[in-house]
Image 1: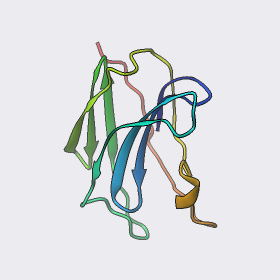
Image 2: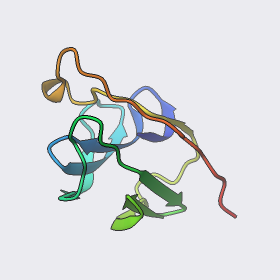
Image 3: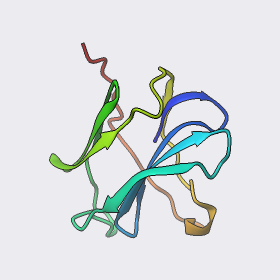
Image 4: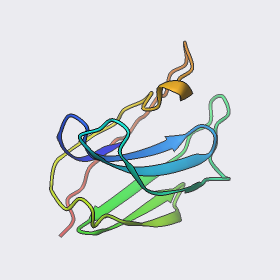
Amino acid sequence: FLVRHETKNVHYRFVVQSDKKWILINNEGSPDGETIAQGQIPDLKVGAGESNKVKLVFQGDHGWFFLNDVLISELDLSARMNSGEIFIATGIFRKAQKSGEITNYSEFRIWSLP
């Protein structure tokens, strides 16, 4: 997910990887960026036909990452407080790409918080 996107490589990148890891990166112009937080997701479903429900909440300088309705981590978002666009992307890390594979998503929704 690219969140609080301003322009090319200026945003947060929140990545869920098939090796059951997640990472939050603050990109300030460089495609590499600075890792803000990362962790393991032991219950991530990665088998053929399996799916996961990913929920990200970004509110001010705080955030929350849920997977399948379970809180995985609280997030410190104080490094980037701007508003911006939101995107879904795959193949963020070239070395992790698998030729011929696809990542499906459905029911992508965005809500405004009070």
